Length: 303
Image (cartoon, rainbow, N blue to C red; front, side):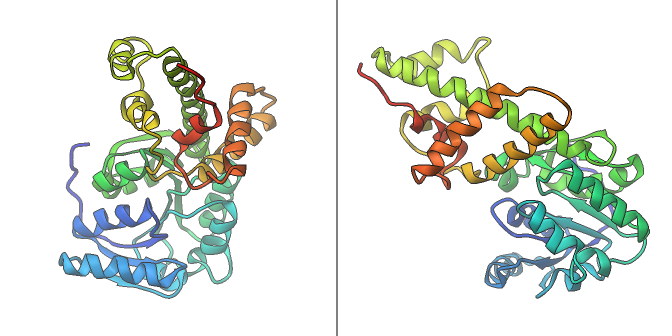
């Protein structure tokens, strides 16, 4: 995304994991003052040490409330609904400490209901809120190439966009509160289906004794091409599954997607089946492997 000139802000960033840490680092590198909080304090200090060595203006805080209290914009990148409720909405969380007129941007993938709850509680305090889940994985966060799908009012998203721009390749306003989260559910459903088909295709090629490199070359230039094929074919063939976004998190996201589909009276048999396949990989000890480890559920067969 083309850089947009913006005044430097005082921002809080809550959650410095494999996604949040790099995103907060991009904010600091862009010249914003970053007030950081992580529930594991040692991780926050390690992050801050690296940022200070690079000459960036950062400070760490023991609580989300302290980090958020002086911020123009509060960003969060946490784990699930329960984490967000604790860190943002509890009496000791960030939202009660934020000043009127500030902006809250939640990059956590949560339920659409949670996103709407955040927006409603923020509005009562004169605070604008944006649900802004991201796609692109650890590499996208580290390289500042995330796709961000935003729910909320147009003015709030316009305020957030020039700041988020430092770690985004695309920012799209998809609708009102909760719409960003629903778009992320659709994103995860797509990934699950693609990885299911890709896993079966690789196993077919292996069992047939095909040259796997030439098979990829033959099919990746046509209608079967996808980001997953381009970036995970070779690593899946090599049984390499350490690329950041864990199956544990994918199952959490698919759980939200399947629940929302059920609420809307929809049938989602493919996503439900892949979710169960992921459950099998979890049961075999693969929950921390990345989502392409779905292939490990399928036997290789005989060439």
